[in-house]
Every structure is written in C-alpha cells, then in structure tokens.
Image (cartoon, rainbow, N blue to C red; front, side):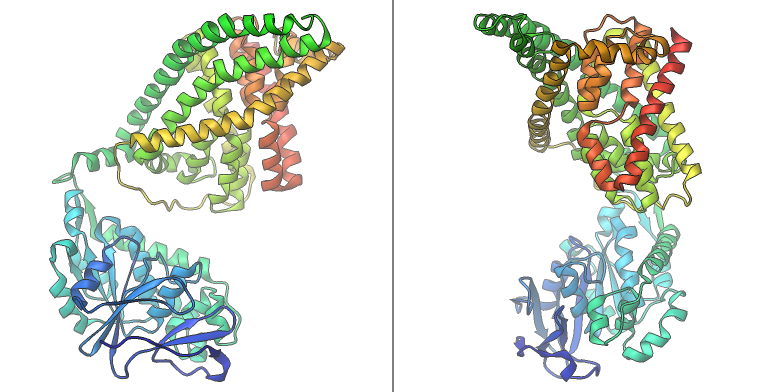
Length: 639
C-alpha cells in the first residue's frame, strides 16, 4: 500500500492554475499543500453527512489495508488506502461542501480532487442528506449514491421509490444496509457506471463565465457560492450568490423527496407513528393540549399548591421568618431603618429569602424539570413542525416556537436565541413578542401559584387573554413590517424516552443558574423598595401612579409597588401581587398587566444589545403603554 508523501509548503502562485491531479489543501494564508498519489490511479472519495455509515463502506472497499493520518495543516485524521488501481479516501461527515469549519475545508479539498464520489445518504433523513448530494452533482463530479439504512426507513414506514430517485438525480442509486453487508457489492459494481447527475437549471446561466476562467466546474461553483479560499487561488473575488443557490437547491431537494418518499404506518414502529401524530394538526393539537395539561397539573397544581404550601407557608413563614426576626430583633429594633430593611415587610432577610427559597425555587425547579423532559424526548422540534403554519400568520416560521418556549424559562436567554431565526424581520417580531407576552419561569411560577388559588375558570381565561394578545401583536407586526416569514428547515431527531440523568442535569444546572442570577437582583430590589418605604417615597409613588392603578386598572394603590418592583425583575413584580388582598377579577387584571409589563433589567439590556438602541427605545415604552391600555380595558369588562 502506498502512503501520502507530503511536499513542503510553497506559494500557490508559483505553480500557476493548471488542473491538479493531487489532493490539494487550499490554505487560508496563500499557500497550498499537496498529498501526492501514485500517477494513474483512480481517486474514489466517500462523502456524506455525519453518522451515515461511511466507515462501513470504507472498510468494505479496503479490507484491512487501511492507513490513517492527519490531513496536512490540520488535526483531522482521514483514512485512505490503495486498492488495485484505485485510491480510496474517506472524508469527515459534513452537511455541505464549503469552508465554514476545518471538517468542511478538508472534505472540500478531497472532493475537489475526486474522480468519483460515493455519496452515502441516510434513507431515514433523505430530505437532509440530499442537499449535499445535489451540491456534489452541481460540482459536476461523477457519482454513485449509496442509499443506506433502507431497513430502518422501512421500520419507520418510509417507502422510497429508488428507480424514481435515480431518474431524478441522474446517477446510480443503490439501496444498502451497510452493517449487514447488504448492497455493498452492488455499490462496488456501480462505480463503473458512475456519472454526472442533473445539475440545477439555475446554474446554466451563472457558471459558464467563471468555469471558463477556472477551467474547473467544481471550483467555479464554490467561488459562486462565496468560498474565499477557492476564490483566492484563482485571484478573483468570491461571488455573493450562495443564498440564491442554496434556496434553489433546497427547493430541488424538497421536490425530489416529495416525488420519491411515501410515509405509511405499515410496518412502522409505535414511536414512528406517535412522532407523525405529533406533527399532524388533527392529532398533534390534542396531543399538545394533553402535554400542556399534564404540565399544568404538575407545575400549577402539585408544585404550586402542595409543594409551595409546605416550603413557603410551612417552612419559611412557619419556622424561618419567626427565627430570623427574633434573632435580628434582639440586636436591632424592628421599627428602625436597618430593622425595616432587613426584617420588615420587604426585608432582605425575610421577604426576599422566603420568595426565593420558599416560592420560586420549587416552582422554577418544576418548570425546568418539565422543559428538560420535553427537550430530551425530541418533542420540541415536532411542536415546531406542528405550529409552523400558525406562526406564519405572526411573521415567523415553526422555528420561532423554540425561543418562545425557551422564553418560558428565561426571556433573556431566549432573546439571544432569536439569532437562530433566518431574517432580521423574524428576529424583530420574536424579540417583541418575548418581551411583551411571554412570562419567564420565575414570573410564571408566581402567576401559576396565584391562578391555582383562583381555580380553572380564571386560569383558562388568563391563558386565552394572553394568547390572544400574543396573536394580535404578532399579526399586527407581520402586517406592519415589510417582507414575509422564511420557510421552515429543521432537523427532527428520533423520538425517545427522556433519559433521567440528562433531565436532572439540565434541571439542576438551569435552576442553579437562576438562583445565582436572581438572588442579588431580588435582594437589590427588596433593598430599593425598603428604602422607598422608609423615606416615604413609596407612598408618594403609589399616589402618583394611582390614576393608573386605582382609576384606570381599578386595583388597590398598593399594586403600584408591584409594578415598581417589576422594573427590577418581572417575577419580583408578580411576587409583589402575591400577598395583596385582591378579588379574583382584580387578580386576573393585575396578572395580565404584569405579564405584558416591560421585561426585567437583564432582558432589557439584551434587547438593546441585540436590536440596537433605536429599536430598544421603541420596544420598551410601546410595551409599557400596551400593558396598561390592555389591563384597563379588561378591568372595564370584568370589574
């Protein structure tokens, strides 16, 4: 077996631009390195997405005569072997041929030098894997497609028309089950029939001029897609047609999948059928409603009433607060300024500790436990598919449900995840909706606890009101902002039972982070309210806000304190409502208003950072105005 001989690094421009027979690593500093391969051999390259079984094919082609070495200039190991007159090379698993990371750069360089590519695709995830297939076809490289895991596809009720797929791609397609050695010999024999496939029609007008300059279709395509390293090799500027080409390629792949894939329940496993039911409106909506009801029964009833009753009333108010008041009271008069700040109504050592450990900790722990279980099961992406059409009315695609669901954990973190959305327009809409209508876990914990005391009727009404506000706000933004939502592209993982270890680790980490973040802010907020109280400014502010709180919202003037506290943290504001003597109708008005109320300081800072000061200044007062406007309207109807 021959091995690679690595030549010294030399400036690329000293070698000209002739087509190269060797593996070429296109360096990012104006250099190239070659891996010499014996003259006259045929270079066969295995390519595919991660975890599609390429290594099984490589071993079947090469037997025991395999060499593994670092690719020049990288830390990546690639397998290669000489078999007769063929030189077989494996590549890292990638989703596309580009230069986004080291794996893709190595795969790109190896594929560029290939005589034939054996593209291994996962039959279960054909819509994902065929994107790379179509890109290699567009590069003009002769190819054979190994349609692997065809047995797993059958178990999941996925039937693929192989002949139709071969016709549409224009290259040989061989169904295989690599781990059982089924179809491997057929793939070897099909190498002799490898040919160029059907390229995107859109490239017929884009490529000719660049192809004439580069004398290489594959490199011309990569320059067109904006690859800076390939462009530097030819001393041309990278083009800016990547998005246009990628969208055309995605449309092409979607059309192929629609033509060749048929999903049936015949032979499908129970988890596969359940997965499909979760994504179909007729069955998915009831399943989602059932899931939300289970979460409410767990968080809103068991945790918020039973557990919190023990932790807050039994432990904190029954034992802790009397102990800490007696302890501090023996040193400081409770009516003094230090005594009021430490153990008074809004005391740092009384109210703050009770709210954090007795009220919020068990509720946040329960919420994160439920959220982590949904994540680990693979249900969240299925919810995205289910609600895609609905969110399109709000100017978002189904992927927008991810930051919205994460917002129920932490609006601050969810605002950062809006970066994952495809356009600035979608990010603006998602950020506004998160700030306005999505209560974070800590705020939701207090709200859930208060709603639990009001009964299911008021709980249902609260959910309907907040959901309606969310829909109306999103619809208005979708109508006002130019453009439209992008198409949904999301990978749906297998449905599985949540792993207890994973769920508990996520829950513990998120809960710990919440306590670490919330405790100083709660203490600071309590200190601020305490100072306002002892200086008399709290009564002054309550009187100033009484036209809003008393006359407009028809609530006690003490609710102004909760709104002031809400500027520090949303959940702190909601907690300020917890001990007020409110009627059920007043509680509902207060809860809806505090839900829409401006986000906490941390969320506001992230909004300004992500959206800029101009948009942040628009979002903040707009939400504040809408909160009191909507709250007042509801109070006029209910009170």
